[in-house]
Amino acid sequence: MELKKTFALISKHHISPNQIYLLYCISNNLEPEYINKYLEIRLLPEGWLKEDLTLDKKALDLLKELKIQSGAVDIGDDNLKRYNEIFPRMTLPSGKLARSDKNNLRANFRWFFERHEYSWETIFKATEAYVDEYEAKGYLYMRTAQYFIRKQEPDKTVISELANYCSMIESGGLEAQHRSGFSDKVV
View 1 (cartoon, rainbow, N blue to C red):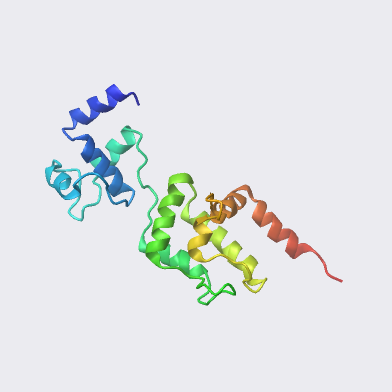
View 2: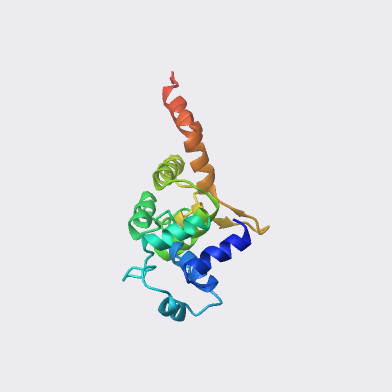
């Protein structure tokens, strides 16, 4: 959207750029930086936030109209718990726990959803395939739940093994790989 049109739209709704930023942060489960969020919440006209400080329909519609990505993907406790429970409740051969703290998972999923558009169902299937693959190998070299989502390498590059597995799930490559493994006859 053209910048002039963006400011016209914001003015039409009688909210400030800081308040747009606040709405964006709330929708993406981020902590706002550089603004006083409590002041901006108090100054925000009625009808933008619900009582529990989540976005009302009006705010979601405005973010969509401004083409600002909102956190359409729910990184709720239920999804985090289901994801984490796919990993075994054990210490891996590396000495690290397979499951991770939900706040670490939440931070990594925020990063993940800023870069990828996979559904939770795809994520769960990809994670199950990953854990199944490493279970067969005695969990040797398996990543923890946190590092499967996002891991910074020694050369400072950041990779997501989860994104690779999600891509394989969506392309059918992983399922085909598993099907062919089960159809081979061993004599």
